[in-house]
Length: 396
Image (spheres, rainbow, N blue to C red):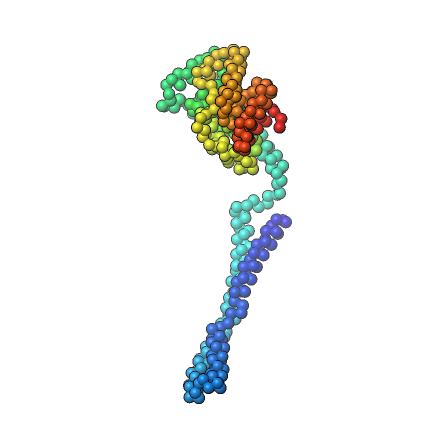
């Protein structure tokens, strides 16, 4: 009730200001005939002064008196004929003022009833976030979401490179032989998604791609799978992307922004989620009230190097020990190149995060120091490097 009284009071004040301006516009307005009378009387006095100074002859002065007197009589008749008009106009102004006041107040109430939320109570930020979390927890399950989308079986899009399709087919065969290989399934899921085969990606990596089968909706089952995937590998890119999507759908744009900003900073240009992140991050940043580095949204001329399709295919068939050795070798190679030749802030950030995942805090700290020295004075680059250092668990 307090809100309505305040709103109506403000509308009434605005209406009174309009009415006062409307009425004030009529105050002190002199009829034209009255103004003419004053002018003619002044002219008559001037004729008498000119006659006294000898400027006018008695004959000219008499003719001037006659003409001015005729004009005075005419103006007086006009003034008497229109003398009641100003009062009538003032009454009309008052009626118009009342109409304006009623229109402002009634229009304001009607507009709020259409666009606002009548009856809504005050809702502080903490309560809004709690309501969003409750709504997120009560969302429909995976089966209901899939049924709602009416998704059908997917086929590989036409025009796909034949060699690439053959590589993915070999990867499918390898993963089928080792269905419990989490890393192999993650690699396959990434390529299935790149080919647009989202339901196939869901089958390959249910813990991270369940959302794809529901048209981008992250169900509670998919959330559990994402949590499990991120617990095993906090840097798994697809799991991070869909975890951010889940938070964005739940209204927690602050958490989505934190996930997506780090993912975009360290992703290769060719990664399938990069265009989506560049499209959605500005919106999420605005809704979260966060600052977004414009450099992250620019297409990189030279993408951060990463494993090729052949290397990923080979990795799927390796033992865990061999795969870890391969990963360490790639990290060592990236480190050696950056130390010898330098590189972009995104490349240094990738190295820092990779060393953090490997648990080599000493080398990660050294990489951060080298990166900051190489990009000293570049605020955007330093922000990217320091964000990577925080992700890697480094202090400062």
